[in-house]
Length: 294
Image (tube, one colour):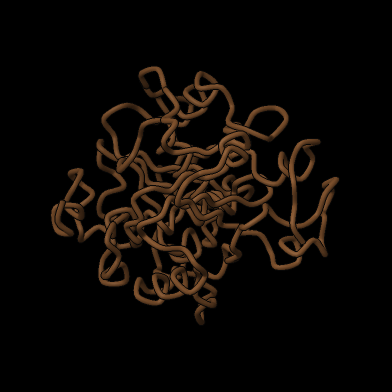
């Protein structure tokens, strides 16, 4: 598939979706700017989700429905919620088959990327987009905000099935993934074991390379807006960290929120085979049968 055909995949997901800021990403259609969202938000083909942990009731983008990102994890927080629980959470927010989902958070992209990843893992690949700069970018662009909670008609979603090609387990890592690179997206202190948080073990998975998730973001601009770095810079930095396009890439963090952020960035750049470790350090750092390096 050529770059142009990739970028024009999916109706409202044309290459112009991202606008000038998103030029250069191989999958630029996955990232949208406020102008594009303002033009398309009212479309019956678009479902807009607010993935912020707080603030929805105070102000949000008009027409957005709030989604509780915590509902996408199981009770222990170490893997996905059940497919039915995820389907119910999405449907309650108005998501329905045949629609394009646009998701935003405050701007760092962690919770928006988490929604993006879960949807793609459960079959919605190339049907989800993230707002570059999030709600902060929307406000900085002078766009309208709302305090009204829209009347949401529960969406109709077919039964969801986890695509096993989009996820990695502890057992698969222990068995060895030929040609794979394990990408630790936590802080440097977590990676080295200086910061164990609440885990039984500190350190990292043997052989894992480190690149913190937030290294994919530019510093806040004069309006406090945080956006993704340019494509060329990101590609160079991932290569320097030992993460190449011809590899299977397994990002992870503590609970696969930061790992999901790196999943989104790698998808944006056109990496073909990205399989986050859903259990992440919450599982690996507390299991009896895992080895660590520090």
